[in-house]
Length: 386
Image (cartoon, rainbow, N blue to C red; front, side):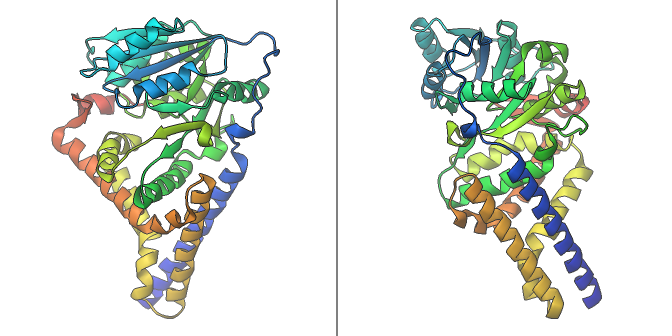
């Protein structure tokens, strides 16, 4: 038994060191939006950008988000806001703002066709109304710095990209939720292999709901959102479609130039991620069990093991726990959060495991997911593989 625990500890150390290398490379290789100079006003012809913003019952953050879009220092620009069957004041707010600014157009949807997720259909319809050379898909609660789009276009043109995704700065109140953001950022970087996204030889792909800037012709060539009509992870899968077709993509960190209030309570976080996590592993029970067991063994157990082991095994686990905390604190600093948020890593990793299992079990029990007052059958969700 002692030998088995020692071997497991050595394996754990090897895995966490490999993780540290991957996160370090990712941190060094991914640029920041703030480091890109805005395109100068005399840069000549600037391509028209069409922003597509789906909104369903977003009255809480909608007006401030739309004003940040209308304040973007970029011309020519059009904004297409899609009111997706809202039952609150979303449509009214959009119509009022559109009446005072001709750059903003509003599309009102009253019905959802079969075999479409609401948000995806709203994005699809918004793109149909767009005539820009570039499409920027974003959410109705994202706050843009006025220079954000010009900086993004600088990077995009300099690197001759077809798709640029940008991670937002997630505003979450309190130490626990900020610790969760840190852990999620680490897992997202590892899951998507962000450091390999720009490599055309790699299958690694990216997509960010807050900022997906795509060449219109590339979007049309992959069929737009039609091929991912039933994907809750539509942003990632749109990026996958583009990568599979050979289009060039990359990712930047937005920092404080792109902000979003992700979730305001732990309860909202749990419910908000229900629809995504099981979808992220293609609704596979095996993948969910395997991934969560790996988190328990390699990211949670090392913090418990020193209390139940002795000798070299104990000290290896102490080293593993110290490395994990160091990685988490470094990740917190990297996204401008308090380093102390990194110390919540084992706790929020356990919460992530709980959310993953909850996502799976609810989908299986309800034979589908419920998202924004609509039930989507699991059989139809599973059928939409990309």
